[in-house]
Image (tube, rainbow, N blue to C red; front, side, top):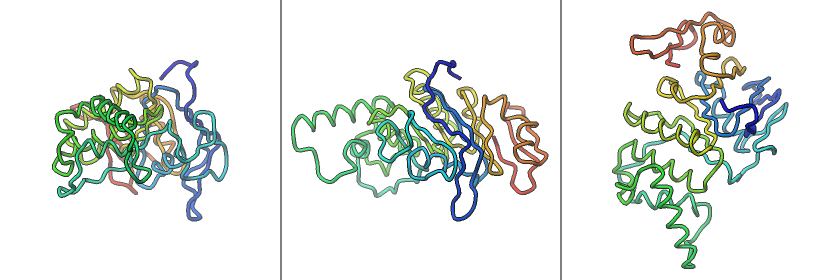
Length: 269
């Protein structure tokens, strides 16, 4: 974690969200500091994506306080970048990687930049974003023909093109092989720790992330537990959160797993 002098980029105080007449979570007290790398964990349906939507201004609190950069969350905040849950791009998608990344500049409105200076600025932004994710060797290829890891890097570049100070990633590691997972995690950690971009990443498996994390926000049974990984991912803390006996086990490769939940399959966390 950053020191106490760091600014809270995201703050929730006694926060609660209801959707469709059902309480998603409540009594959430969370502070995410500038330049932190934070993972959001929890079972399916716990409200992980709802947290991201709240930060984006797409959901509202039913109780409590939510602040992003000291203000109420609102749509279109240019300081916030977002990568939604990834869907594999179709092979026949005849769009180059550079065009996909360029949508991060002007994909929100019709037309193209006609003025020469605007075109030059866009090209520079696209090139900088592609270089940042080390995708230059395939950025001119058709995105539908790229591997999942290559596509994910270009999607990250699209989110980074506006130079956000807060980056929200919803399960960016799903459907990636271990090599590409490691590459994405290392890149995102570098954004947080070297460039001071606050990263909030939703995941099902914490193991690829553990060496790089500052903070864990674990959501289960409508409640939050937040803190350093070794404070939250423990038998005692998760048993209290789930209100059921839970055990953290470690395999021979050092991966940790949550087991002992009858209502869920054992899942790697």
